[in-house]
Image 1 (cartoon, rainbow, N blue to C red):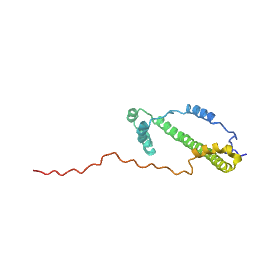
Image 2 (image 1 turned 90 degrees about the vertical axis):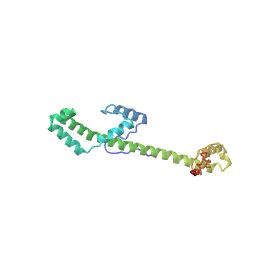
Image 3 (image 1 turned 30 degrees about the horizontal axis):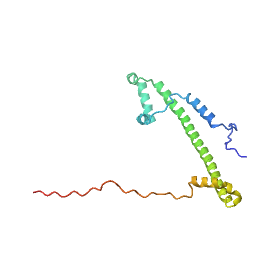
Image 4 (image 1 turned 45 degrees about the vertical axis):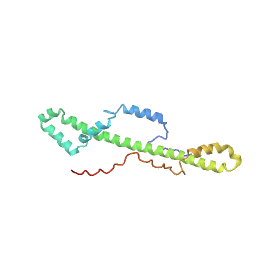
Length: 178
């Protein structure tokens, strides 16, 4: 019997059910500062300022530290900005880990779908072989259902193109001056 868990040092050999994992992920969401979904149009407006050069950010922090007037104008201290810069770096590690976890979950689900689909195709093949003998006639309705639902081995049906109902523009007649 094989299990589908990857045993790494320090990882317990347990399997969680999907509902428990979802519940835990939702609980973790509550721990993430500023967590939220952003609509696409708003996200697009945030990208330009969010992607300025780190060197530019450092220069601006230095400028704020050098000038009380600039600090008053932007309303942030160099210490606040340095802390936020540190938070960005630390939370990017979380972002990378979550992305890797998502990729792992996607791969695991693909493997599950593959196993399931392969078993279904094997079942179809075995059933086709068995129904050739009369003692397995009770499988014929099941085979018919699988044949109806099977998308493999069928050519795609292409419908005849429908004639265009758009009128074809006629060439304009030349107007002659009188």
